[in-house]
Length: 118
Image (cartoon, rainbow, N blue to C red; front, top):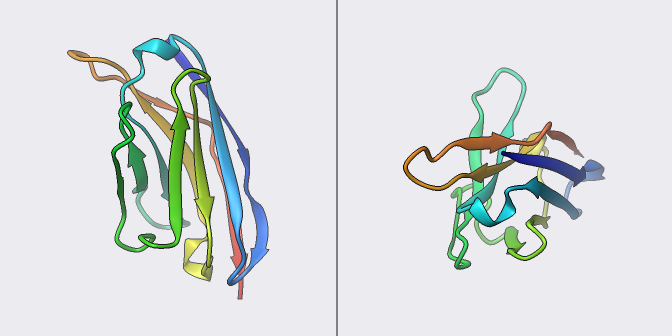
């Protein structure tokens, strides 16, 4: 079992920056990929960024060049640095962790609100 707790987020003006953190507890050593998803009102949850245990990353096209994710495997934490924020980045951001094969279970944090004002 893995538990995820996000921190950070809040209200920022367009063009500003925010950082999110997510701390995992429980079976940290079993976690493979970690990442961030977001869900805006009336929209489906979408991938923002993912990072493998080895540090390989991939990003949604909409955030490439603006957002950066990193992780600390020993602490079981994952980070999201968001620069040049836009109003369309407004959403609830969720931390995600993927368990090992074969189950590949998904774990989710409770979500943290990010609001970007124009």
